[in-house]
Image 1 (cartoon, one colour):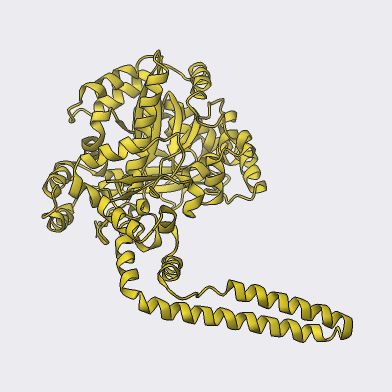
Image 2 (image 1 turned 180 degrees about the horizontal axis):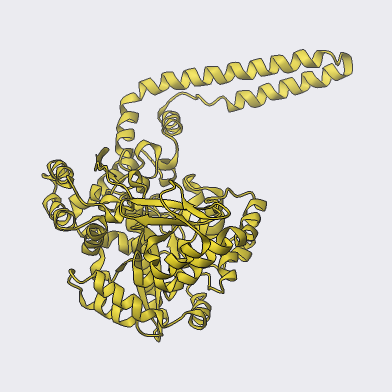
Length: 531
């Protein structure tokens, strides 16, 4: 069968750095602890055990229990939370924003990657316990990035004038979106079930963080997933020393230079440039950058002003008022959790690779970095229809125009490819060039111009014939393009556009099981999942 998992580079959808990292290029060795593999976890367990402060375990357990106080825990979740107190327990973590209904499909793949890796580790290393963690990015403040989701080409959007960290957003007028969505999926096999999940999660919650926890828990609780909101005073109190170090000494910017220079030398783009202070100040309705003005510190909007002594005092007394940015958050996570591995998308892997030297400065163990699983979900009927036209999995990653051209050539009874003619033409001009060198060298300029004209003419004729042939097969090609709308919407990866509800409404919980059974996070190939 032509529809199978393929190498990431064949999708033509990922950048140079993530592709090189997946291929385990040795030049990354200075930027990581080790590449992820089942065997390499043994060393990671050893060094994390020696480095981690086990006193943190009680605080983590207490915070999780408090955050789950209104959610009924199943047996495996209770065991996982209890195990966090044990020194032989470690976590595998992924983080993500609070996208409505989980946002694009790749969120589901991130969580399943964590769950499946934990299951593999529990089988291999039986004297240890491993717990899957979803770290909620509740302190993010970019509402426009999370306030929408797409299904079947339709985008649902929640409008709100609230400001500050999105986790605190009240779910005002959210019912309007629920009603609109319900009307859209009402006739689907699992539409009502999906709408009930949404109502029980979002309509009955105090804020977006609580709603996201309940919703994600509904999907993944049976696999023992533990959801952590680290926007918590107890947890930030554990991290105060590093927060002060960032304010006083520019921990990230002054110690990431080594890693960033290495990435630049390797000709990679820098995903996130460190700021002088990589902290935000949060209060009700605000999350503002903290800026060092030399003699004093201030927020970006000048709402708050501190002397050096005053800002350190506030960190000591109210650490919950300070929020790590994208480059400081990894240190916060690895400081408070007994974590072995972070699973992230291409952009996340890129900015984590900037931070090894910062971790070293803080005497903090850098986790194994694993690229999340990526996939495309294909309905069986669509796959069968495409196979009738000899469409291969590689073809769905072509641009629509390139695929149309390929299909036209395969359907056509005429030979439209002028490659042979161009080879002959090239030989003829080569002979003419030899003659001109022996007779009149000034003739070469005119010869080159004529050669270019001839080749351009052939290209133009080839395109015109191809376009004419496309019209003959337009109906058949159009049908194929329609079939591909769900596989590669608007020439994009499906996982970056569609919400999981695009399939859940038709297959229910079985959809999650099928995905889980088809993703191996350590395989590092792009997965093709038939449903």
